[in-house]
Amino acid sequence: MKLFYKLFRQNPETRDGIIATTSGIGILANVLIALIKIILGLLTSSIAIISEGANNAADVLSSVMTLVGAKLARKHPDEKHPFGYGRIEYIGSLVIAVVILVTGIEMVISSIKLIVHPEEISISYLALALVALSAVIKFFLGNYTIRMGKKADSGALEAVGSECRADSFASVITILSALVLLIFHRNLDAYAGLLTSLLILKAGFDALKATLGDIIGRPGDEELAKKLYQEIRGTEGIVAAADMMLHNYGPDAWSGSVNVEIDCGKTVGESYQFLHELQLRILQEYRVTMVFGIYAVDRNSDSGKELRGAIASFVRSKDHVKSFHAVYIDEKSQDIYCDFIVDYSLRNWDRLQEEFKAYMAELYPGKKVFLTIETEFV
Image (cartoon, rainbow, N blue to C red; front, side):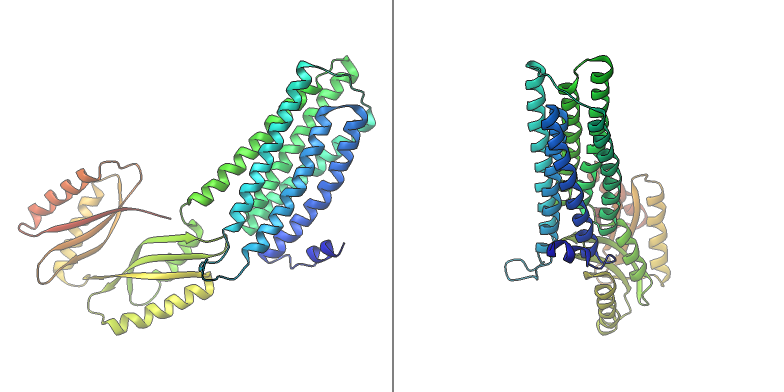
């Protein structure tokens, strides 16, 4: 009881508090529902109800894994893991997905055995009422857990919530099969168990897919990137910003890099001052360790404006080119530099290179053109 007291004493507005209290509620609810269903299933010899009870017991383990993963993820960085242990939460989500899948597979095997060798079952309206009550509880518990998982940015909580909601749908199938038995005396329990198993397997595959996406690497958080771009572009001294990369080391631990355009007339000392202040502000307000790449650009001279206008005209004629930046002419060599941002549907980057260089050769004969083509990471 001391454990649950600690869980429910957490601050519900913090991420850790949301995970702890939501998991605690899930543990209590699933222990109660699992006991009721397993006892009912044994008394009625219903594989569908026993399967649901076993799955609810697995939900308890999932909630415990969510708690453990969140706690381990808070460990401080060390020499072996300088970016911290935040990604342990993803491993916890992976374990939860595997547990769901194993439970579903075992239920499929049991259901198929009963289809081949059916057994008599006995069930009552009281048992059905209890299953229906558990279905309602699981449905609202699932929606609540998913909502809290999104609020806390916890894939593990979302996986547990999705499984809870799948359990409620599975209970509806069990109830329908039991009603068929009571009214029409047709035993569809094994088939109901099989359909229930498939629903649980789907929840497991969805959880596995989402977790593997986090482990392999997703695009950086779009909302976070918008806020960071707004902060960076609103800083006096920065002309423009592009090429942001955000690397996730846990749901609330980020490091990133971005290229910023600074007027070529600015000195290193002047640039350092506002970039350093910006770096500290981003770390304090957004918990992102940001590194800046610097492009010196000329936006004030007539030649600079003419060059940007020519490149803008080319970009407007290409559907796959989303934007351009880092335009610069080297004063000594007169080489021209430019970066393009293209969408992911563009496959022939070499052709775009050739077309742009041919276009620039007509406008700026004798000058070398260096084009860098990139995609957005957020």
